[in-house]
Image 1 (tube, helix red, strand yellow):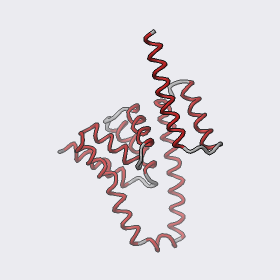
Image 2 (cartoon, helix red, strand yellow; image 1 turned 120 degrees about the horizontal axis):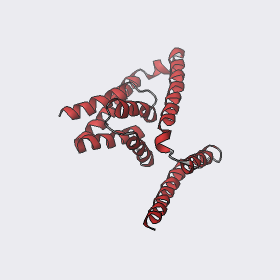
Image 3 (cartoon, helix red, strand yellow; image 1 turned 60 degrees about the vertical axis):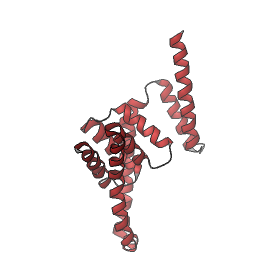
Image 4 (cartoon, helix red, strand yellow; image 1 turned 90 degrees about the vertical axis):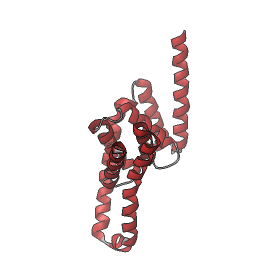
Length: 182
């Protein structure tokens, strides 16, 4: 029961103090789960982020489910997802009640623009910090650059990029397995 409360409270505080949506939670999840608590490794969290991005749903919620499940099975997954979504749910209720006051207030609009810039910086920080775990060689770096070019230059739908990465990963694993068997 203590472990479930730790999982819930950790995700609750990450959710409570992270502004900007699911992607903005990733730097905090990395900091807390990998570096502070040591509950998962960098390689595991990179894998969780990749799988979470590849399936329907919010990336932070999907990631919290996987971390919670790893730590305490199904009850851990439930505690993690409840902790992840409850702060947003409560804040959304408050924002809904006071929406007109927020949207017409120039100070609040400026604050939201500032938060948006900070979230972009945190996302860049997370990507930069996890590059060593994700990009392990020249081929990985080239694939990353190619995927970025396809998305940003040619405007290819990210779903196709993820699917392509999935298939390329399988192909690389098969080739490596055959080379190891030879």
